[in-house]
Amino acid sequence: MTSKSCSGISNVRENGDFTDFGILCGDERIDVHRVVISGRSPVLYRACTSRFSEATSRTYRIDDFPLAVVERMVEYMYTGNYSDPDESNTSGSDAEELPVLLLHTTMASLADKYDIEGLVALATKKYTEALKNDRDFEKFLDSVPEIYGMPAELSQPLRDAAVSKALGVQSSDS
Image (cartoon, rainbow, N blue to C red):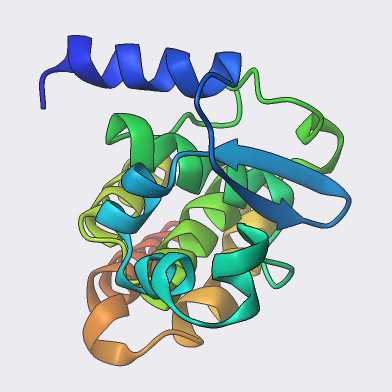
């Protein structure tokens, strides 16, 4: 899909045109198109097409991830990318924004849970890039449990980046 096509589809969603499904997160509803989300996630495909309540109510609840992350998941489904916290103009989630490193590791975790192809790789790339510029060791440490909570085969590149960062900090402290 070309970037112009992605932009057009994303604009239709943002305007609320032809949306036919809602993702609920906390008190917020994100209106989406079933054809888009079901094409990006086998988990959401089953929710849209099954005989379970999600298919008839045309809503799916995600309460185990922060709104800022769920909004970025939807952004990724429509555009193939998601905004970093400083670039974001998302509605309402700015007050509960995650630190950048934790955002990227949480995006990878969400991508794994919903089997969203390409999102783990993108989140890993963004995490690795953010590590190069991050000077706040506490925020780095906050991202580590999320990495080690994911399956090792999925999170190995994140683990490698985290270990390299920790070793770099340790050697510069010596």
